[in-house]
Length: 256
Image (cartoon, rainbow, N blue to C red; front, side, top):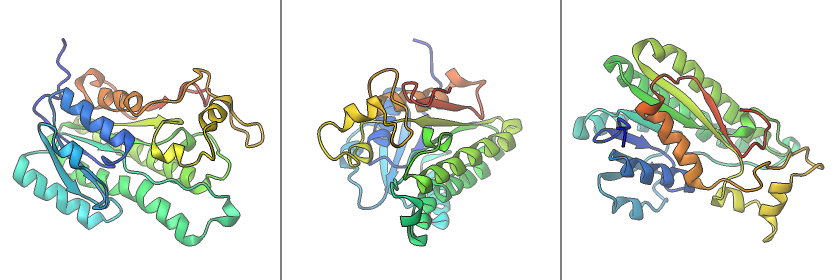
C-alpha cells in the first residue's frame, strides 16, 4: 500500500464529538496518525480516547485565545501539529425574518470565526515550518442558496473563502489548504431536522417548494464518506492540491 504521509504525524480535529468529526479521527488513526480530538467540554469523546494515539481535549473554537493556547500547549507537549481538520459547526434553519442578532452571531462564532481562529493559529506555525495541510469542512450550502438557512449558508461561505485565501497565502510556504463541502449527511445535525421516518426520502427526492434539488445518487452521505475526502486532502495523495472546494453531496448541487 502506498504511504499516505500521515503515519506518525500529528493532526488536530475539531468537532470530534459529532458524526463527521469522529469519523475523521478514526480514519486518521487507521492511517497511523496521532490525533488531538477536540470538541466542547459537554461533548462525549470517551470512545475516541480509547483509540491508539488519540488525545482528547476540550475546545471552544469561537474563543480565539483558547485556540491559540491549545496549539501552544499541544506543540510543546506532543510536537508540531502537521494537519488540521476544522469540522466543528452548528446549524441554523430559520428564515431571515426570524433570525435574531444573537442567532446570527452564534452561527458565525463557530462556523466562520472558529475556522479563522484555527487557520490563524495553524498559519503561524505551519507557515514558519514550511509544511502542513489544513482542511475545512464547509457545506454545499456555501455555494447554493438554501431556504431558511441564510445564517448557516452565509457562515459556511465565509469559511470557504477564508480557507481559499489562507491557501493563497500559505501556498508559497508549502502549506496546502482545502475545503470539503458535504451535502445531506446522516448525522444528528441532519436527522434533527426531520419530522418523521420519511425525512431521508424527502431529502433524496428534493423539494420544489423550497427550491431544493434531490440527490442524483439516491442516497445520503455517511460520515465516513465525508471523512474519506477530508483525509485524502490532508494526505500526501493530494500533494499538488490546494484551494480546492470539493463537493461531496451525491450530485445534489449539480456542481463539482
